[in-house]
Amino acid sequence: MSRTKYLVHRLNYAVQYAKKKTRLYRLMYDGTSTIESLDQFARLPILTNAILGSERLQNTLVGLDQVCITRTFGDDACATGHLPKLLNYDDALDEYKVLAFMTEFARLEGKHRVILLGDDHHVYTISEFGKYLAYYEWPLAVFVVRKHTTDKLAEYLAEFKPTVIFVDSSDALPTKVFPRSVKYLFTFNRPNIYTKARTRAQKFRTLDIFREPPIGLAAIKNDEDAHYTYDPRYFYFEATEDQRLLVTSFINSLQPVVRYQLMHHGIITGFDKFAVIK
Image (cartoon, rainbow, N blue to C red; front, side):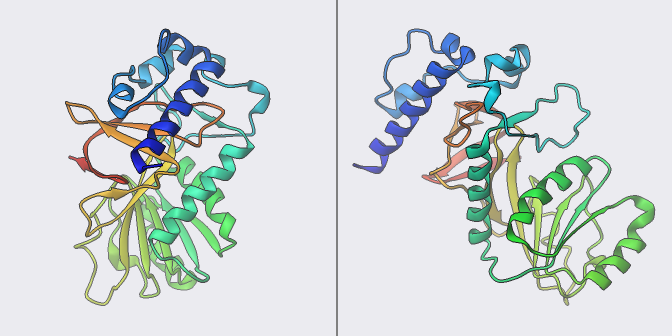
């Protein structure tokens, strides 16, 4: 089976599953037949945040009795229109597989000392992300950065000596606080903000993780790359004529995601790659 035929097969399964299991997709796809081509799939209705927000939660779920865990990965848990994402046990395991894909992409091997840095607007997401990193049993710490704690952060980092830093912050932190022990620095939907800020003594790699509340972690890029890379076993990305990015998830079985419109604009640059347009 060719790559395209296999992809169409998976997309058709996602469509038929969503249509059969949830009232939302049953209404959206009324009259829709078997998906036999990517062009046919691209003519399906687009799922938006407004549609999800107007639906009762149970209309988007396969079954409330299967709920295992809730997560959002949104920047502000108190924001208007906040939509939690519900997962069953298999979905949660699949999200660990996505994280494993990202650590393999980054070539994170061996044991690491990891610190998660977030500001007041990202406390929820950075601590929630720590739950996923705990899967690797690395020494792990979380520090919430405020303007008056930068000096304290520098002291803490010097003592902890992390090899990996994940930063979830609205503003870039001064790189002078990062010790020489750091080998990798990850950001979330904020590529390149530390690429040129490194001092000559700092040799860490900078990478950016693409995430959205309905799908969680989805793609990753080196800051030298123009595009994000994702695993086609788990997602399928599209771009509309007006360059809005859409995503279909193959791993959200409790709360299906098919042709969901992201807030980002972009273009598809390969079978497993896309570029975000600023």
